[in-house]
Amino acid sequence: MAGEFYISGISGTGFDYQAYLAKYQELKMIPVQLLQADQTELLAKQQAISAIKEKLEAFSDPISVLQDSKTYETKKATLSNPDIATVSVTNDAVETSYNIQVNKLAQANSFKIGTINQISDINAKISGTGTLTINYLKDGNATSMSIDYNNKSLKEIMDEINTSSDLQASIINLGTSSNPNYQLIVNSKNSGLNNRITGIDDTSNPGDDSAGVFSENTANTYETISAQDAEIVINGITFTNSSNTFDNVITGVSITAMDVGSSSLTIQKDNSQIKNQLENIITAYNDLLTTVNSATGRGKPLAGEGSLNTMVSSVFRIISNGIGKYGILDTVGDADTTKGLLALNEDTIDDFLNRPDAKDIIQKMADTLENYINTYTDNLSRVNQRYDSRIRDIDERMENLTLRINKEIENMRLRFAKLEVYLSEMQALQLRIQNFAAGLQLNNEQGQ
Image (cartoon, rainbow, N blue to C red; front, side, top):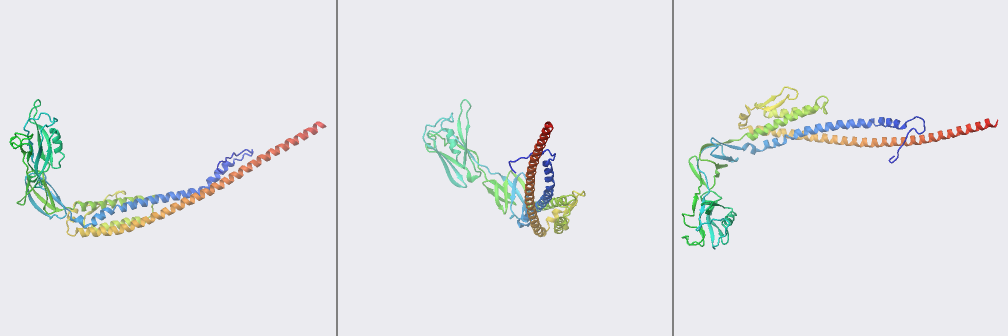
């Protein structure tokens, strides 16, 4: 009982009941230990089944991709001279070839804005009043940005221009370090003729630079870099664009010019994703085979479970009958650990994927494989549920049995303790009687 303790041997009998009870408890716990062994075995089986189920579930993603018709519509673009452009295509692109010539790359223009009087300190406040207006095109539409320069420095004007989403400004020194002459450089953020800066206006400048701050004299304020549209020629037809990217000039094709030059462009079916997913199917099969072999071998948790080997053989037949008969699979490995593993045949896979019926063949195999794997995965889930139930049942049985044994031992310990106290008391009484008798005998002897 909790809070009590017992000392054996106080009766002087030499009987150590604590040792006896410990041995008795050890013997009584043997059924619990057997249950623990059963539970450990069940846990090992459950873990092995879970590992196999996980390998079966690895088929799901590649099967799903191979079942999708869009997987077989993917196109790719190849340039004979990849330095001149980058190309991306959608499934709408037509499989054919083109000749491409890049004549010009798009560029944004730049304006130097001169000042009527030399500015030698970019942080000095401008004392004059007026507004600087920068005129430009935005996608072909005339627009402008105006900055009130009263009591602002050249740097503050630059910072205000840089808040624009269309313009970018910087300050250059056309003088020397000892005699600086600071002026603005304004660039269009967007390339092409339809996004170019067209000029500037200072509201205080009548046009002859006799007043105001910013010069309207073309000798001082002028375009430093001209805007330019990109120009490409496709099969003899010229196309221009404000940016270097030409979208849907060819249906489903986007071309971004990178450099002047020529190249052929070939658009063709892209089988890489199909091939990758078939490789994932083969990898999933190899992992499944290895896992089942490891779990069902001699001395392993699922030894003798022939149904699992039958399942692997069924998966192999589905893959082999589906695509293997077309000569695209090889069996690899000769040791016990690699025997029966599969690999795609790199020499034949491309020819197979270019077959007009390759899509139908692969999708039929994927559908059959999905149906079988889903069914078997459900079966394994039910097996694991049964294992869970049995493991919980053993837990409950061990707990109840242990409680009964502990209660029995505790009751025996209490009875032994009481018995030992009783024996001790009897021994004490016996000793008193013996002492009393010895005293009587001594008195009798002395009276004689």
